[in-house]
Length: 143
Picture 1 (spheres, one colour):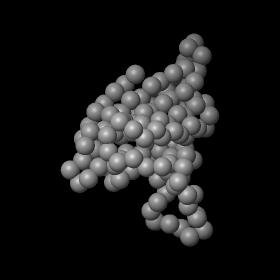
Picture 2: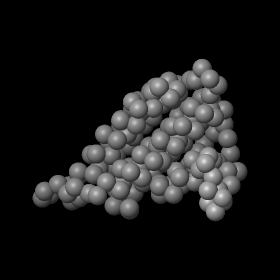
Picture 3: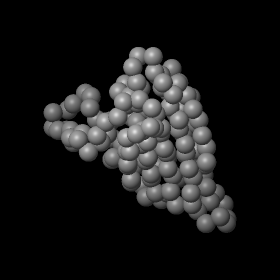
Picture 4: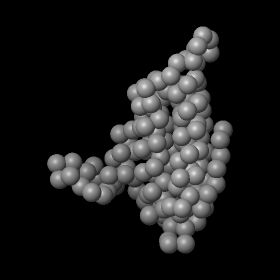
């Protein structure tokens, strides 16, 4: 388990992104069966995870806290077959099921965060409370 706690401010986005990217690098270069040479994958796994995480981070900063921000706890769990990111904050809650899918024919400039997260990850859950917990899982090898 890898953990990081940062203020929920855009100034800390790069630090959080680097932590998740470093964890993705472990997956991208992992030996698939624990034997033989490491296989370098095409980077699609990392690109999808980073897109989802970046959108989730932005949503916490923009919607969960006021301008002063609050704390955001990030956990990355690497399993043999899955990569899970949990984000915990103590800000405002929302109903993830009430977020409608965007009309992509309209070429929206905003409001795509949850759509992107769901498109890039295999399992996405959000549990409001103290703390709010968003969990995003991507199966390794499911690209």
